[in-house]
Image (cartoon, rainbow, N blue to C red):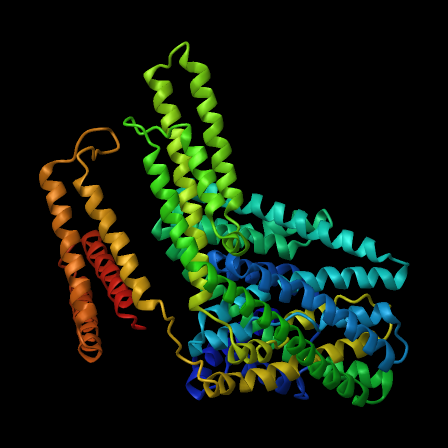
Length: 637
């Protein structure tokens, strides 16, 4: 009963703070930490120990999976080098350098124990991402911070495991590197398999509630086997989430995706808030342990302050050359953008030129691709490296040509010719798609530069949080200076969370990065409209349009759908052309109308004048209309 009461009270506090903190202009996690600290020092509240396994096994896999499942995988691929550098290299450098400092200033610990503490205080917390998202900071900054937060927890925990092992026995550097690579690569493999298997199962259930229930199992289904094989369960959960992010739109229905997103958002809110509240509640117990062991807190406070300054300084020293590298990469992209565009047109023209009347790519197409490659600017290959794709298509086209010539003597059936033509066309289409993606990657670099202002935000957003505290509590009970190290970890986490988290909104606004809109927003919006509208027109105009059973659609049905599509396109054009003030009034009135309709239906239900199933269908239709209006009007509803 006491546990249940505690859980209910914690949930109420999390909900209330999450709802009220934004109105006061402060981040909810900061308030929750302070509330937890205050409650922990109340005389009637005993020391509250929290099992770190609950956080590491029961909470983190779910939270990181949920973040990865909503993470834009396309942007993750584009900035993988920078994200990987901050999530892996920066954590390792910070842990080792801070380890030397800790072994020097903390009595009774050696270098291995110092590196263990360095690994504990190295990973950043995802709370920074939620803060700058609400402020409307540049999307690329959000992507880098969110991607870093997904991966650096795993780096820290794997490094911590190796450092703890080194305190008990001698461990070689290559042994640590080997175990790290094994832990990551095996975890990625397990995560990908579990993620795809989860999508396969959910696609076949046909029930949004059951599909969402399966999604609750996926992160733990990835975590547990990875840990059993001495891999990183956190990486496995993240990999499963990235697979879900990439493939869910292809395999899951809209109802499944909406239900999953809303349910996971609720779980994230409660778990994240509960973690920060628990973080504050543990303070009294930590202080008590350190006082009993050392008689004073000043050592812990001093080392925690030194560590907090150290992690910020090391982050700044790492981000500076990273920004220079990204700037150089952007300059190379500027140099080759026009050349890439020209070469793409040349490749398309040559491939069209060497297509016979039956639509089959002729053997001379391979030579044409080789000529385009030879004539291309070498900088193109340095920037996007599509040479490998050209060579791959060239080899395939040559192979198909040889097969065609070998079979020509005996003749080919119409089916064989069609299969050859389709295979070759598919491969050429794939090459064109990859080439277009290279150009889009270059455009992304040009449209979203990372300058000094963005660098300041990236550095200052590197605050520590619950992962640091949970990792500290996994230290063995006989670990040297365990209570002191845990309190130092808490000091770093709480200090950076309060100082950096409390001032981050001011920093973002001061730098003019609040409410930033991408320079490609209007162009991208129009381009997506053209894709959606053009696809609908092409499909409805296709004379081969058929139902699943092969029968044609009735002309009336085709025209009715065409009328609906055209009307929706006209409505959207009119909305975009309407001044903002009038557009806001339109959506407000539309929502007010839906609210009035719902009130009338509820009154009819109270009177019992209509069947319940009819009333439920009418209310569901109003709900769907309201969701569509809110999404189009960008209102909270």
